[in-house]
Length: 481
Image 1: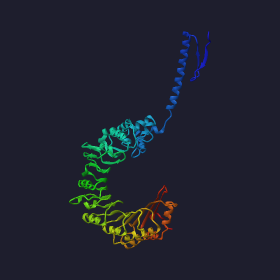
Image 2: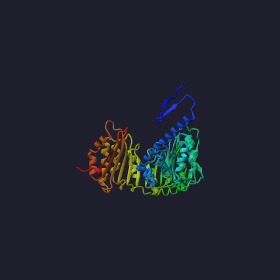
Image 3: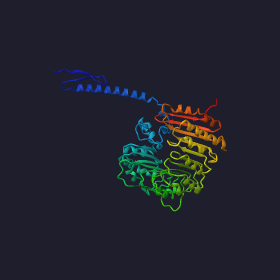
Image 4: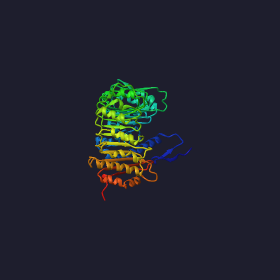
């Protein structure tokens, strides 16, 4: 007969008896009694540990849910991404209490930025957790399938769309044809597209006709689209890659438009019987090979910014100003490709109401010393208070010419010392020097010191390329020796 062998339980240490012969009833009774005593001991140990664990208090979990929700609100960016490693999804993975608070706080979920494929279930959960709040969605993806998933999940919430930004393939733009669908909360929409892989798409239509709250639209798509928006209610509008005829047709409907940024793509002047009247427009930024101002009358324009590629000439600008009789006070002008004579003609075309002139500078054949001479005459732009200069780093004689021109002008003008200001914002590669070293050399110029001593506030910002850093000088913050 085989003898029994004795082993110990690897988990609790109790001895186990294994027999090779059938167990008797007494053996089984003893074994059951042994197991019952083991269960009693383990249960007592579990209860003791549970009581000890329950006695531990985490202060953060003792906060009222409202306070926790407020803290969570500061953890979420303006455009959170649906990622488990970032709030608010990250907050739902810490503990059950935090998950409950996060999912019960709609403002944590009212917006998100979509730039990579996200499971449909996550999108549905996110949108559901946002409750009834207006939604802000940013979609930037070249993946048509991923964009379709996003649209499929969010369309049922379209009546809560508040601010929408789409950068999607051209083939997906037809998804923005909402026609007369009611979008009661939509106040801002931005649309642009990826061009690659969409050469087979002939045209597209963006139609949003029933959005009573819509006030702002930014359209930057291929120049073959049709746009059907409630133009008559927009106050801010950006149009990129649009032909001049379509642009004028749209502006005829913009009766309350206040801010317009536009880039046209053709150079053919359309046949328009009379200039389009844009009654409430206050700021206009334009670029492209166009004749836009030849076809506009803007009586309340205060800010005009001409882009680097604008084909506007001084005569057209002067005719526009004379026709509009607008109170222009802020003008931005590129002086990359124009001659000193053309620059002077522009200055004479500007109205006397201009108080801030912004000049954009770049590489050019004409020496800088010749460009700034027209600024010396105080009879041109007599109310000018602030000159902002943006562009590439100049040679030393260029800075001297600029500082001297401003000093001479200021000395002979009636502008008060408190309001006169010169801003230089320059970006360039400073070779072996850092921007701070270049700035230190610049502030040693006698012409700059003379300008500051005369009462002109001077602010210089030099930013280097290739991570060279940034240096700032403000004469108002310099302590006199």
